[in-house]
Each structure stands twice: as structure tokens, then as C-alpha cells.
Length: 390
Image (cartoon, rainbow, N blue to C red; front, side, top):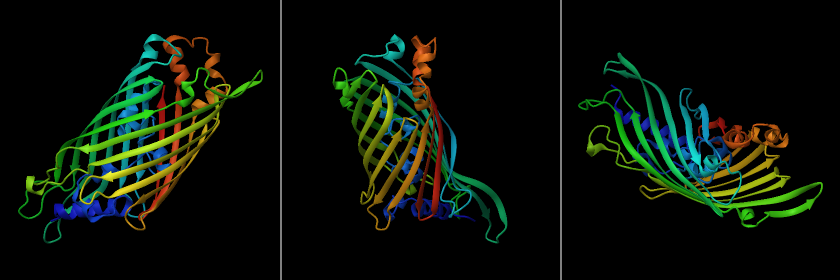
């Protein structure tokens, strides 16, 4: 009979071996370690730096970013993606994510296109699931009793507020409903199945300082009848405390396992050159520190850079360095944005109905694709995502 503890050891070992940030022995005492993993291609291209990013899926990693996102957007969806996790280890281990959100802002309600003040309220739903594959339960004589799937999953509900007035501030909270199935039935005298449910909370904030907006006419580098060149500079700071909740109880309270409580703190500086209000070149540098709030409190330091051209194509490089020796994780990735194409073709200006709410939606419509790859102890893992927002 397959013991629950054997399954737990196997599944946790797969993640610990495969994920560079899980190198210390005391980490394996925690349950549902998949909650630590970043499945965002944009973040994974930049060394898994995620808390400073504001995009269609960022609410799962930092609830505060949802407030900033809906200062300019109404709806966001990422199409379901399935990441084949370290294919050199196994063929049926996958990390699946899906996100959807909606929000309302002062500019959407009033129809204003400018002004220094704006406020937003955003709601989002995220579903994440880590499939460990199919297992077989046998009796002491080797006879197959049953087969079953094992997984960890979480349904996440996020609410956030955003405010813009010289700076942009987002704060939010996420409730996670967690399920973990590691065995169909316990071993020996343990008759309780290796299944547990639990609740956890994330709390996050982000503040952006759009320096160019502090000037009446922005930061103008060149202005002539032929066109105008502007500089945008935006530093940001973000902080998240994740997976705050009670231990996961599989068999009984005495054998419960703690959640992987952690904190992430990031700092980013983004700059861009705009020609006649259309992005020409962009660069973003970001550093992030992650601390697991268990045992010896191991830390991981991350850094990444993103280069953009014409608001359409983006190339990313990064590195994730854990305190554990030989755990360096280089990453790279790229992305495309339809929004840049729309801006350069001036399609929004050509729409006769571009006023009020229809105009707001037309000005903010975007379709994005992101890809990333990184190599760890279990081989190469590739991440892909398709996002829609307006």
C-alpha cells in the first residue's frame, strides 16, 4: 500500500530538486509548495521578479497590482495555460493557471481622458493547479487496488483599490481556498486519505512614481513641427506577504504541515522614449528579494531587465540566485503587444465612435503573448501565456 508520507516525499522532492528556491531541508516540512512557484512568462523572463509587474495575471502574485491595472483597464483575461514542469524529470507534471478580472475607474465613469486624479476598484479570480501525475495503490502482495491523480490547487479571490494623484498606489488582498490531494488512502493504521483543505491570505501593495507626470508638459527632450520626443521615468516599490494561514491537516492536527509563508519585496525603474505619444524604446530594471518565513528563513535574490521596441516587441533576461550553493537560475524570454501596433497605425484616432465608454475601451484594448524559458536541475521549463485586456 502506498503510504501518504511516501507520496508527500516524492512530490515535494520533485519541486525541491526542480525549483532553485527550494534548496534547504527545512522547506520540505511545508505543504503546498507550489504556492511559491511563479508561472508568469513575463516574470520568469526576468529571473522570476514578479511583484512589481502590472499585467493581466499579476493580481495572483501581488494583490495590490490589481488596483493599478484597473486605473486604465476594465477587463482582463489570461487564456488557460499548462506548463510542462521540468520535462526531464517526468512527463505528466504540469502547472496550470487561469486568471480573469474586472474593474471600474473614475475615468471610465466620467469619460475623462486626462487629469491628475483617478481611482479604481478591481476584482479578480485566479485558479492555479499543480498536477503531480497518476499514482497506483497496491496491496502488500503487489496487486493493484486503484489508480488516482494527485494535485495541489488553489482558487483565489482578489479585491484591490487603486489611487492616482501624482503617484500611483495600489493595495489589495487575496483569499486562497486550497486543496491538496497527495494520496487516495493512508498507510497501515492511517485510514484517512491524504487530502487536505485550507485557507490562506495574501496582502500586497505597490507604489509607482511617474516622474514625468509631475511636470506640466512632461519631460520634453525635443519638440519641433516634425514631432516631439518625451522621456518617461517610473520607479516603483512593491511588497507582498503571502500564504498567511493555518497549517494543512492531512491526517490529524499532530501531523499537520505549515503553509509556505513568505514575503517578497521588489524595486523597479522603468524608462521609455515616446515619439508623438507613441513608445519608441523602453527599458526596465528590477530587483526582488524573497524570504521564506519558515525554519532558517532562507532567501532568494532576483534581478532582471526588459528591453522594448516600438511598444510591440520585448526581450527579457534575468537571474534567480538562492542562498543554497549552485542554485543560480538564468532565465530569458520575450513578448509581443498588439497595443503597440494599434498606436503606431493610429487606429484609435481613426475610430469615429472613440468617445465615452466605447472610446475608453478602444484606447486601452490589448492582446499580448509572452514566452520564457529557464533551466534548472530538472531540465528546461518553458512558459507561455496569451492575455486579453481592454
